[in-house]
Image (tube, rainbow, N blue to C red):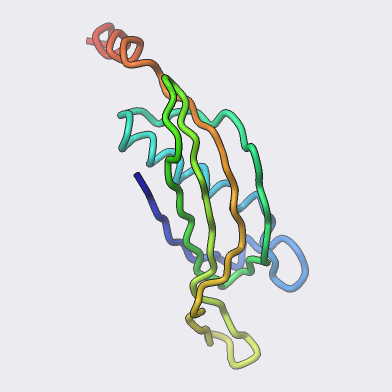
Length: 133
């Protein structure tokens, strides 16, 4: 199962000189992707347990359009291992004008990661639903 989210990076998220965005922004996107994967696969938002690896490969800047992707690569009893990537698909070009931008072909790989989420066991989830009503 795979999920992709696209997002424009607003200038209010620039954290460093050169309109650079911090790496935590990308980790937040990975969390959103993981949440959707858990909902689609398990009917629950799940909880992020850990990252096994995170690599920041290229800068993300305010004005970029990024795509965060996730794919479940392993399913345990309650755990799901997910491979993530974030690519820059469009980049602002302020040197050409205040609103100038270009589509990047190919997209620029900004980050990759592997993480683990946990979801409730089916019996626990079923009992929780039954006790709510």
